[in-house]
Amino acid sequence: MRTTIAAVALSILGAPALGHACEGDARLTLDKPATLEGVLKNGQGTHEAQGAFSYVYLALDKPVCVDAPVAGAADEDPQENVEAPVDRVQLAGEAVGAELPIGKHVSVSGTLFAAHTMWHVEDVLIDASEVSPR
Image (cartoon, rainbow, N blue to C red; front, top):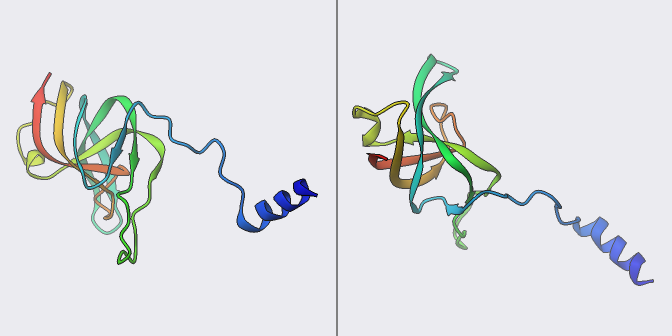
């Protein structure tokens, strides 16, 4: 009887997603400061209206999990966790306009945020305040 009730409850409420937990080396949170290490690389994206463009991303030394910040009661459109481990983070902010050591191992500090425009190729970006050679 208990097995039947549990099976009915799972079919109505939905079973928990097994195997979908992110298994990155660390857990980071969107809209929070972070320092990441990896190799800077050039990427190529495509904007629907304006065509191909280049961008810079950090190929992380170790994949990370990125969680959404805790949603408040007033949040009408809360952010979601990034389900898969992230191994590339697109650079944004003032550091992008500077001379960057492409192909070099660096440490990048800034605030993480989720992609939300056609210029954002990677799922996670960092508003980079500092890029330091390692």
